[in-house]
Image (tube, rainbow, N blue to C red; front, top):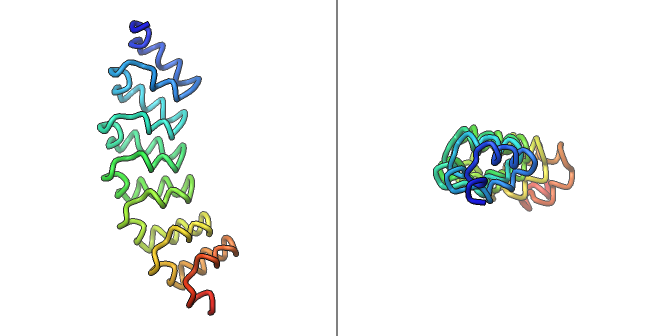
Length: 157
């Protein structure tokens, strides 16, 4: 019923069981920051159900990416360009780098940390970084197959 969909206690219990339940709560509760924080703590990918205001809320997005790095995909453009948010996402799942802003994807310090976490993330690097000896070395130390994604010049080195 509409009354139950608008009941905060019911919504909180529902998202504790399954974060996807947030999509069935009332619009008012879907926009409630306290409800959404609990939701993304349960399942970071539930950020996809957030409105634009919540996708731009640093606290909510940080909670989401700490739980599921790939939630970065659903963050606002501004927060995908936030180095701390992107690093938290990458720490949880190195593949999240593909959802960071182009600027952060080109940031050597960010990418070094990314490939230390998962060498195969080198596949998400731009040409300049794929040709960076330091980054490629870190990537192959973590995963030998990362060499596949290095520049031709470094593969022949």
